[in-house]
Length: 123
Image (tube, rainbow, N blue to C red; front, top):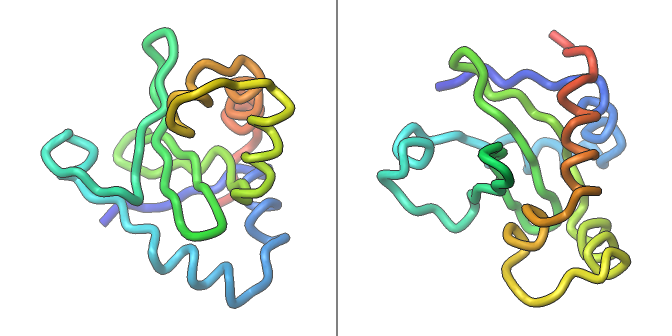
């Protein structure tokens, strides 16, 4: 079991979600070592990559949690609603491919992630 750490941005994004939805989202968010090591495929999880940089994605029905692994902890960089991602992809004019592939090629997406990485962490 990994410790989950939210930065200021992701903590704010989670707090904007209705309480029952927060509980459902977080209770389903269990990071499996086998997935991280590439030994297991789990459709709820994915990886977004660009220029050697990797961020993991957990997908629930309505939300996406983007996180990194740092010193054995899960560091949540952003928590985004699926509709906001669809709108983002549409406005960015992203073509065919999976959601993860499209985001991996988007500079704007990586700017969102970098803002999360630079935000102070909440303990």
